Length: 507
Ligand code: SF4
Image (cartoon, rainbow, N blue to C red; front, side):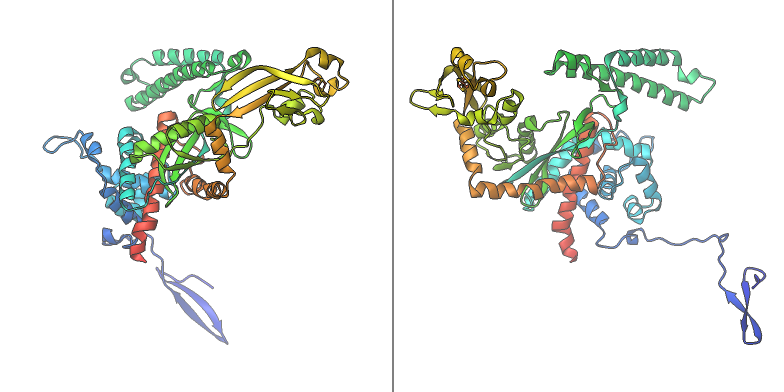
């Protein structure tokens, strides 16, 4: 075979004894071509980018418009429409694109983004700033979206499933330092800022680069100051002296905390709290906490739902991580029906007994309580008398103690109280609200409702992590990660609206 001349390629083939040339269509990559584009036909009628545009168009964006400084009749580049910026971020999040640079690139060559922008390019700095600039505006958007969904019958608030999930912070574990190291870094950062002087007078680099370097050095200094403040907060918590001395904080994201992950490992994270209405799995409340435990997050979560939707949920369903006696009392006080998982437990657990070296045959169950005399009798037949009480939220612990001489002379002493006799027993009595909760959770109805918790509560958690890709925050600091989860919740809810209300019209 050989190549033909000019722009046409020719090959020789053999057919029998005759040879003939074949002709192939040429590929010309040097040519220039102009093609008309009908922007509105870049995406089909039922494309979800149109649904997002339509939904955002229903929202009152006046707070965003008020913040725009460029006005008609005055100089300056026109601002990008907040309707466009909000729609871009929501569509991008729904496709798992969470970086401003990536969205800016997609605006250049993805038909859905091109349709949205009308073929205009959008600078990534503008996108990035917009995402974190309007905290109050974003809160208001979330409330407005819930108002629309509620009006369309997608929210009932009869039953809300609440759950927490850990999302990794934008900081690695090796950025955590103790106070001495942070102070040393802070001193270096201060000196660096002072030595930089005026970036406009530098001859080595351009003014733009100089300003960027100065801004980066200042931000580093601010982060280190914040790190020292966060260290103070950690030390203010109930920690032992040893824990206080060993307290460390991240120099990259000082507000992140090391938390246990679902895989059993530990990583710098934030605790994302999500309240989901059971009717159509709409997120009715979302927040971020620095606490690794969920116990203290239930009351703020109910407050958030009330603030967002204007009323308290009728019933809240939570897992064992939220079901404490304090929370049972708090929900009872608000006349809110709580469904959760809590073992009846004893005041002296098997674990405590084991740690004290008590033989299983002398665990509290082996002691007999007599309600008339308010005493216990031990396996050796001796009497344990009342010896004080301890009041805790939702429970009172009554203490009983054996006579010291009885235990000293007892042949079972090594099995019953090997560490420090005489033996004592604690009888816990739950408050009426807690006892009623435990009784409710033993009924078939209580168990049936609790079984619905997993599929509803864990669905938005999984969606946000899998579809939006929010397994690790892209932003740093409590306020900014709070905005990142709010964008994720907005996106999730609008996707639910598209599935339930918008999509059926095209079916
Ligand atoms: S050690 Fe004391 S409490 Fe235990 S069985 Fe003997 S007498 Fe009873």
